[in-house]
Amino acid sequence: MKHIFIINPTAGKSDSRQRIYDMADSLRTRHDLDVQCILTKRQGHATELAKKLCQTGEELRFYACGGDGTVNEVANGIIGYDNAAMSVIPIGTGNDFLKNFGSDMEKFRDAENLWDGPQFPIDAIQANDRIALTIACSGIDARVAKDVHKFSESPILDGKSSYIVSLAVNFLFKGIGTHWTVTLDGVSVEKDYAVVAVCNGRYYGGGFMPVAEARMDDGVLNTLVVDKVSRSTFLKFVGPYSKGEYHRFPHLAHCSTAKDIVIDSEKKDIVTCLDGECITTDHVHIRLADQKLNFFGPDGCSCNATARETAPTGE
Ligand SMILES: Nc1ncnc2c1ncn2[C@@H]1O[C@H](COP(=O)(O)OP(=O)(O)OP(=O)(O)O)[C@@H](O)[C@H]1O
Image 1 (cartoon, rainbow, N blue to C red):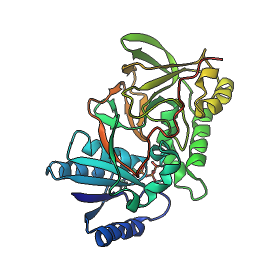
Image 2: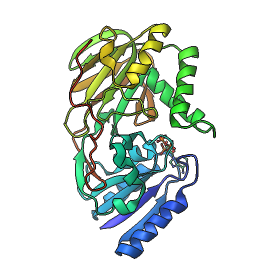
Image 3: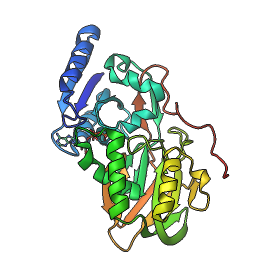
Image 4: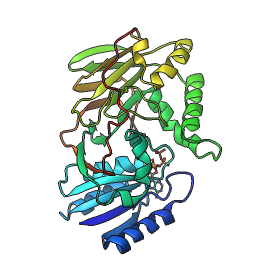
């Protein structure tokens, strides 16, 4: 078994490379493991690296060292390879993926808790030709996420503050709704939409949680569709939305467990964020991925640690 640390040197606000090298060294010396550290050189490189290594057929454990973008890229590289599994060492800005593990997130910071941890499958979202692990969101939230990186470079803004600033800019200077046809399990409705969030997990945008009951290993995607709203309604809605309280706005937000989600537009104006990585297109087709992702983590951890037991009913 080989242990591969894929490190994004640009992730997060400070350079964490040395800390990762030290952890890798510690695994070598304390446990006599075959360990390799590889730095990514550009966007998309983590997927290329992981896929190439998986194709050797060797038994591999990957550690995605970065933020959600790096996690997403390594997942896209290893999914479908039985000889590979991945975990995460969070050194990014937001690290929303690991929030699904609740307080165990802290244990992921030390490879000592990971290298012999249990392996389990988690679901993945197939969005066009890409995989997302947590949320595939289209609409104003995706436009906010697309812009968030501009603000997260500021030394005075943390993950959530960067998101709030990006939200304010999009809210004030760009429209809330976009005219699309959204098709859920074959039923199409053409109108103006604010958000279509397809959730396997629960967090995005520095901690926003659209669907609190989304579980990452139940074979179900929870899709929240939000109509275009006025600015004043949006202001009332966004707080509850970020806490999974969509049920307080049944006239605006509809949650379903549709298996097949398609968004079409006459223009190339659908921004879709996949674990924070954005694509822009005029057609998005989203469903549960055929393959599950092999994941490993600290003993006893659960990707559903913070999940609400059942879907709420409207008030
Ligand atoms: N060497 C590199 N140079 C420039 N960009 C890179 C490099 N390696 C990876 N990237 C890109 O950096 C982007 C940000 O990475 P990542 O999301 O992991 O960190 P982050 O933005 O700090 O964290 P988070 O998304 O959790 O807030 C990704 O789009 C990734 O593809």
